[in-house]
Amino acid sequence: MFIFIELTILGMALLRVLSGSIEIVAAILMIKFNSVEKAL
Image (cartoon, rainbow, N blue to C red; front, side, top):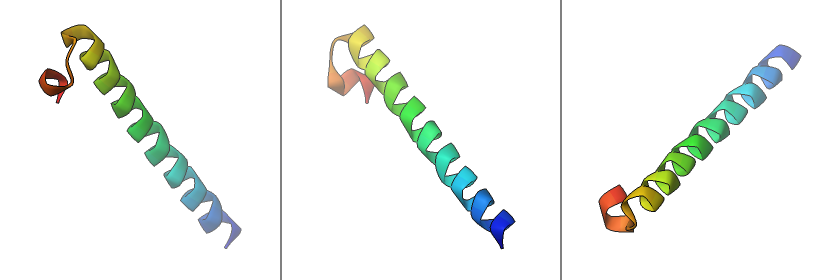
């Protein structure tokens, strides 16, 4: 049971890192193109 809880926490952490890196890439694109529309 404890191993399952650890895997769940690890999965949640990986999802947060992934979504965070996507947001950072989107922010970099917005800065590069100087507009929100082009980045999306």
